Amino acid sequence: MNYSVRKKNKIVKYIVIHYTGMKTLKLAYRKLSDIGSNVSAHYLISRKGIILNLLCPKYKAWHAGKSKWRNEININDYSIGIELENKGHNFGYTNYSNKQYESLKKLIFFLKRNFSISDRNIIFHSDIAPNRKKDPGEKFFIKKIGISRFDYKKKGKNNYTINKMLNLYGFHKSYIKQYKKFCIMSVKRSLNYSKINPSQSKKFYYDFYNLLFN
Ligand SMILES: [Zn+2]
Image 1 (cartoon, protein in one colour):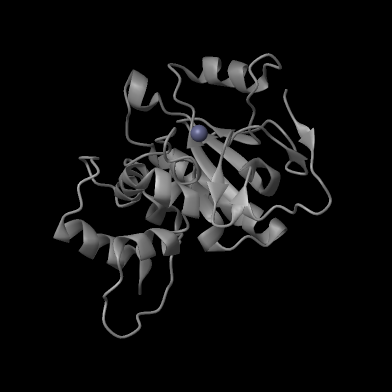
Image 2 (cartoon, rainbow, N blue to C red; image 1 turned 90 degrees about the horizontal axis):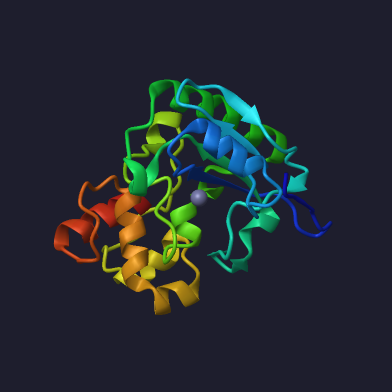
């Protein structure tokens, strides 16, 4: 099991949701607990809804990799990583099971209370590494676990630029600059679009605006 000690000044404030992206649960379990793999996570939820606690959240797991979110880098320092069993985009991406959503909902409820984590700090791997990662992907419906990540209030006319909205979504400045197309694709995954491409249609602008603002 790979892990590090958390630094005292880096408190847990995020939950990062992933998929395993492996052919079987067994392979995923093995990889996440293998010291040679260079990865680990705190929790793994099987398609049957079984929650495996692989590492105590007081320790740092290695799930996010090179990552940035808002003004922070290396999100492992501040987060708890939850892996959902799913073959992923490379091996046959499927819908998440209802049992997975039920278990994830319970686990997140528990973690939110214990670590005082707000809904807007429940984030996706694809948000914090949009140029590298697609998980949990467009088939993950966060509403099914009763979370609404964005609660900006509408102010006047909706004349926000795409860049401003990407910033409000939470992408790190450098990602918006370097990887804007990937950021847009990441938002489309959040919106559960079936086609993920970097095009910016009026419909996308409208959907994006409605995702952020209440
Ligand atoms: Zn991931």
